Length: 349
Ligand code: FES
Image (cartoon, rainbow, N blue to C red):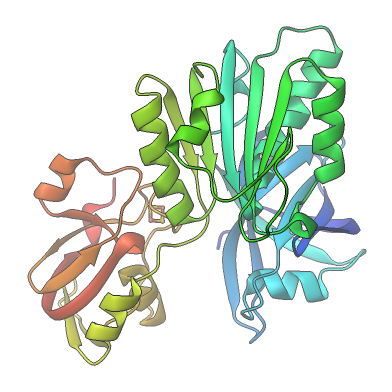
């Protein structure tokens, strides 16, 4: 990763749901990265996983102050990933390396609207938190702000992150409404809390949103993109997901002993592998450089061209049907299954 700045950890605090909030200060306040850092966007952090291998991971900026101080919220995965090591080792006084800033969604994306909604699952709440804080600043200074609804889906009541902040905003502002869906615990339905998973009809009480921001895992984003586009076909959809798609269990089982040969057309290199992982993971593990950012089918950076063999394309949020018909695919959303597969890695935009 191209390291652009160093940031020092000033403070850490625990949130519900295995989330830790890190307050970071960019050491060089003249650094160009500071202009790019905005609440809602993502910053790439270069940090080792628990085995000591450095990786680059994106985290949402949940707030930023003029002085170069900003916050990120990191959820522990429990699978020895970078996030787990950040939880365990990033303490007050230690430093982290920062790379680029990415992401198109910030308060400017919604502040000119009359009405919009956000649908978030789990750690996907970080983007709504960032936007709500920015909207609240504008509302307090007397500016016009959009009517804003947040549907938050969380497994258990004890896991609801930022609950105090969200409830306070709901109860004290005229422009914000919170609805929490508790998906894995039997709770009594009341004004703001409902048991179960929201369906497309759960969206109908949102009044004609001009835009819907969807943030969560890849499968969550896929499900709510379908719900939102069927209930509000004219609403603009803004999607964020950091969780890579996963091979479906039945495909993984059926294909686990299949040999796959990947033929890289530009270098002639052949990679022999099994099925079960995405092309992006396979290529990275083989030391083949591939451009990537979101790892979730949103940014389009890992675009390749593919032909031959058998492979499965998971849903993505940027390629058109026409792109797919002529052989474009996203390495992060493509799972090779068997046979000889040719890859043109120079098909990136
Ligand atoms: S890395 Fe963003 S679409 Fe694959």
